[in-house]
Length: 188
Image (cartoon, rainbow, N blue to C red; front, side):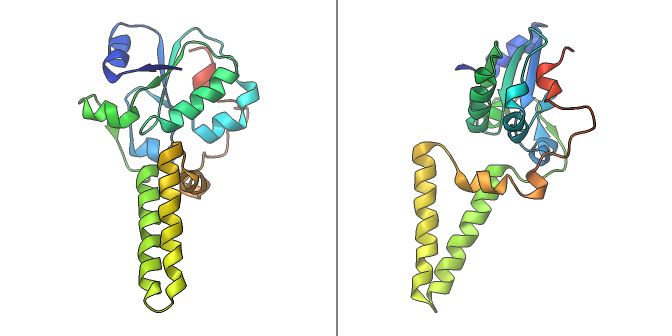
C-alpha cells in the first residue's frame, strides 16, 4: 500500500496533477471538517459497491480519514477492485491539520474516535458507579477495557464499527441513478 505524507499530497495538489482526495469518513464527520476539494465517499458505501468499482479515469486517488485506519481499509477494497494509482494520506486528517494544512469546518457529528471515547467512557463510568451497589457491574468496565486493549493491538475497533450504523453516521440514501461512488470512479 502506498502512503503519502501531508507534504507529498500538498506538492501533488500544487503541481496541478490530477488528484482526487476521497474522504471515507461518515457524512457527518465530513461535514464537520474536511480537506478543501475532497469528496466524501464513506467506507460503508465502498463496501456496498465494491464489486462495481471501476475507474473511468487516470487520476491519482488519495484516500483520507481521521487517522488513516479507515483509509487503509478503503485501500484494501479499492485495490481488490483493481483501481490503480491509489494512496492513503499517512496519519489522515489529524496529520493534515497538525501540519497547518487548510481544513474546511462546518457543523456535523463528532469524529468517530471521539464518539468511541464518549461511549466507552460512559460505560466504564456507569459500570464503576453501579458496582457500588451491585459488585458484578465492575465487569462491564473490565470488558470495555479489554475491548480497548484488543482494539489497540489489532488496530481495529468493533465499537466504531457498531457506531457507524447509527443514523447520523450513515450514508444518506443514494439518489436515483447513482449506483456507485462516482466521485471515486467517474471521469471528471
